[in-house]
Amino acid sequence: MQLKVLTPVLLAFLFVFGCTKEVNQNTAENEAIQIKDWLDTMANNNTKVETTTTGLYFVTQTVGTGATVKAGDTVTVEYTAMFLNGSVFDSSSNFVYIHKAAGQRMIQGWEEGIEILSKGGSAVFLIPSAKAYGVNGYLAIPPYTPLLFMINVIDIK
Image (cartoon, rainbow, N blue to C red):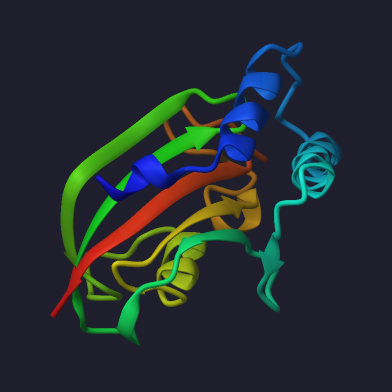
C-alpha cells in the first residue's frame, strides 16, 4: 500500500493537532488559523509544501510515471480523508471513478489535486473549505473545515 510512505513529519503533525484543544471550525477566521498552523508545522519540519495558483496545498510523497490524470480518464486510487486533528472520515483502498464525468464529480480540491498526479504518484493535499464543502459543510463535515486527503494513484486508463 503506497500510503505507507506517509512521512514521519506528517504523522507528527497529526499527533500534535490530535492532542490540542478543539477549535471551533465554523468560522473563516478559525479555518485560516488552522491552515496557517499546518503550514507553519510543515515549514518547521522542513517539509516542502507546494501551492497551486488557486490555493490548494500539497506535499508530494511519490512522483509517478507517465501522463497525469485528465478529464475522462478512469482512475483507480487509494485514499484517506481526514480532518486536521487526524480523525479519518473516509477511506478506500481501491476507489475507481471517471475523472470529471457527469454524475461522478468530486470536491473541487480533489479534482484539481488529482490532476497533479501520474500513475504511482502520491501526495497529501490540504484542501481549504472553499475547495471542499464550503460555508455549509456536508453531513459530518462542519462549515469552514479544511480537509487532508492522502491520495495514491494506482492506475489511469
